[in-house]
Length: 353
Image (spheres, rainbow, N blue to C red):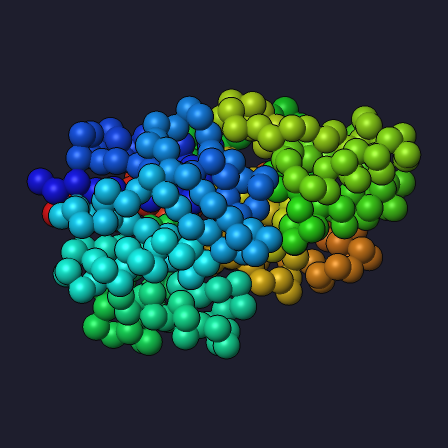
């Protein structure tokens, strides 16, 4: 059996269960390479994930990447999985040479850039896709769209997941009184908008309501200072990045819903995995995980950057509190069917068959 080798820019902790699954299923025929941190410095590799070290060299204000420590893999007869990211120069070299030599090279990532299927720069991404033996995307919708553009290309789906099936369970509590945000504290995610709006409408919201704000990023210090200025430390609980399953489960259990004030990401499937619905910004360049969102079944949309509508939708959640609590089991069950580590991992193990 040939080896499956995955090369990543970084290997963050939210991928731990996924890579653990591959190590368990493929054992000695699986290898993982990764650098120390991603293009965004708030995304760092987890030391608890077993990986072989790659060295990242960023250029042009971290817009371009070149990796070393991986070049011994260039000519190997292995199934090599690279990121579908045109900004990684070393991946271009791998793709071109391995295409000429007819070595199997798989691209894994978003079918389109953040600007979507009609992005003017998609021709660059398309060259990468042409050079790849196969492509793995994150959603079924992306596969359908890409298959139309590339009818003869093998396109697989690995739904972006964080939790194993046995960990996708309803997070239960005696009282679901709070809100939760889990993610990077960066401008594109709009955590500052979230905090500013909650502070502005605090008197109109349930008195015992709190916000768990969990994450790291360049906006964190601004948020901490804003919370202190408004003496709201007991209202907005700013916490460091949390990766522990049980700790997250406890906070999700106490929360009536989670919030995505900016573009949606992997946190949505995490939230649904605990049975917790989400309040989502409507008009953003969302990540493909937006496919999981079903309005009024597992989520509500609010008008983007509109503080009035945002506060109105929070009140709606609490007005219909019992209805949303009753939906938690179905939200988790639906997530388990589509967005588990096992479902995601089977796509990769199938490459070896």
